[in-house]
Length: 319
Image (cartoon, rainbow, N blue to C red; front, side, top):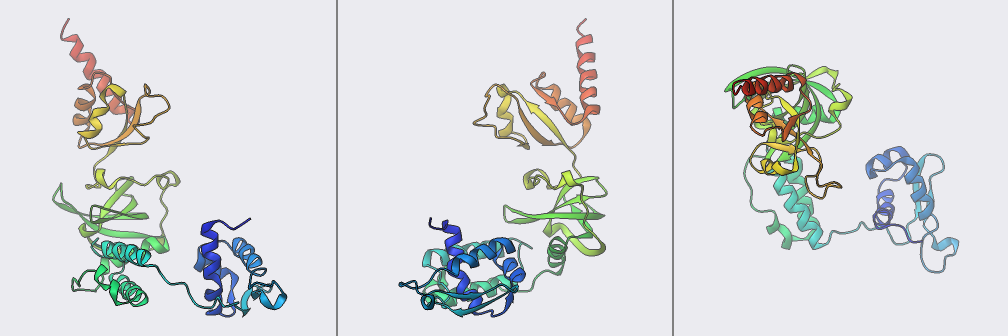
């Protein structure tokens, strides 16, 4: 049986990789290749029986890896690295340029070096794909600090500007991951001040300091990425709601994020669960009451109880 396409691509790249890194440890090679040492060992065992037509011992790729280090004796002509196709190079260049336009998404100098190497590898005819030069290669030190904290799993102390409140607050956060959306980069983190997961836009972080403690968000906070659309202000709370099919149109008119697919549901008559960011309990109470029971609160028992009290008081006025 032929290896899967993804494995075949990896096998083709392995021989020149190991030929250029003679004596590299299996563990290090596995990390570089993004696979486990066990999978790497299986790949090496397969490469060991591959080679030139004839299939005699002298025709096969010669690999030594029993002692935990990989050494290539005979490459069977596979010692030249694979070259990018024009389509692959163009795709990578466009993606790198898009990342450069997002504040804080990548190390700008590193991205430009990667662009230059790709252009050099495919020839000058592809240079035009990476349009122009926007000047400053210097990476914002605050952005670099945030990325480093995410990479190393350290807590952060930040000063953050909230546009909707026009105020700056100091917070201690536990980084979870980075997100990019609409040409902005966000830090998703557990905010100890708000006691919840929040998204912090990079260009609104005035300063960031890596703390001498690990990032330790609650386990359930890391399961599902938060939506950058709904969290421009990290101080705003959110609630889980249940929406009847007859009023699903509100998904197009309010800042609501479905927690499950609204379309192609197994039971079209079943309600849809979603997350709603709101400004105040009073606004949320009025919002839910306005739909006459077709939108229900699931996560906040206190506000749900308040909705019931206000509805009962309104009915009492008609007696």
